[in-house]
Length: 152
Image (cartoon, rainbow, N blue to C red; front, top):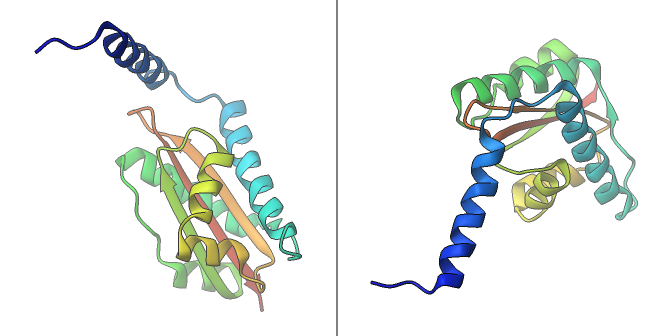
């Protein structure tokens, strides 16, 4: 089977771009920028709907970081036990969004906004605090955890 040259060039170019990003470790600056962009994008979505912005919560940030690191280390996406987050952080409620494979903080928030349950977390009126962390796995993919909460 012969493929058109244009198709072969497009496929080869796409593979080169994908492979180029896989072996590169994420610097502290890239990690912080990814998380900052996702946090800012979350607050833009809330502001556009006249909701109070969520501020970083130190306890939630620790749980988000730990979750993103665990997912990146295991190269799989999964949720953590939010009962533990509620208890340890002294919250009355908590929610979590997790994702992997998105190239930027803005892209992951756009994807979450396209999903009913993730969107509900981002736009939940009662949330006041957020922890957000991203880590790149050895496979080159970003793993992201966003943990929301409201104190008692």
